[in-house]
Image 1 (cartoon, helix red, strand yellow):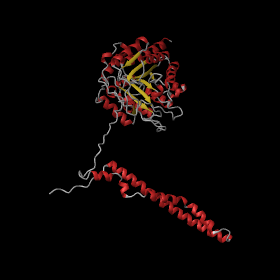
Image 2: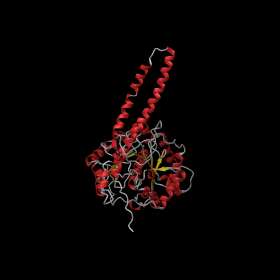
Image 3: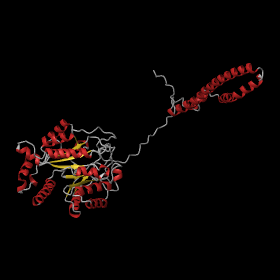
Image 4: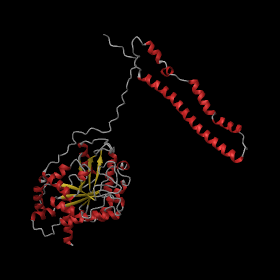
Length: 469
């Protein structure tokens, strides 16, 4: 037995046309009724008004005049009604020419179907470049890393290594043997033995909270216009953490705190002074090894620009630190796009130059990111201007995009090119030291023996001059 034939199906496009006509027909009828109801209410109100007026002034106005006004009011309604009557769309008109198609296709019991072709959207240009093979970081699994991390958590401290998602945290916090670069001079034999035992672990502690008041396009640190207040006990916490770690080199950095009156310069100074005081070895601790550990700590401060207010820069520069670092980040042309609007290329140069004026004994240091679209000539110009402001140390590193919200990478610079920049910076421009590599950061390998030896050599020179005087 054959199955009964199914009724013809309407194609989607034909159904859409019918629905549109149906909507227009009934919507006009609906609004006509609505308008008629409104006019009826107005007519009743006018009738009451005419009645009240006639009773007040007598027979001053005739009924014929009132009727003339009402006829004018309903002229538009009558015009709309007559227009609807002329159109008078029926169900047959609503279906339209589809009936003819149905009659012509009775034999096949279906309407002709139209093929819908979907066009694919053009592929979007790839904004994120694939990372090359040389960008590989050391995993953070060593016991030294676990020790530093545990102390940071217990004291409630923040580190730029974690907040800025630095890829070198396993290498810096884990430490490495410095036996290959140990000096054999008599003056630092005991210090060299300590370094061989403990390695050259470094950490970058971020003070004044973990929330910045600025929003640079390259930085992953969270931002806010009104961060939490400062922790008055933070100088003690930092000093306690660093001395317990037994670090030989520590970097202190901070978020920008434009919301504070002194932008955090006084707090930064107190942290450095307390750290130097506790690590000087002048306390009553009789543990010889602990005193060795304390005497070996070198402090580097990676500071904000303090909006170019040089009196605030002076507070930090004269706090007793060994290395004053402030990052210029990129070349002058890219600065407005890369850095926050409150930062400036010339402003950073002025800060670095002022440090040497108020403290000639301190080493000054800065860092430049590569891969943002800078040219070789712009990099050379930046290096020359840094040397004109007596900057001692420069580092070059590959910019890595923290997230899709940040600036994309324009280029991945090869390790060979980084080595060329290192040679050029030291030999041609006269920097005392240059660290250059894809994974190098401003505080990466800050504890390298060469930089530590520079600080100690300058200290010995000052002591020799003081002894002569």
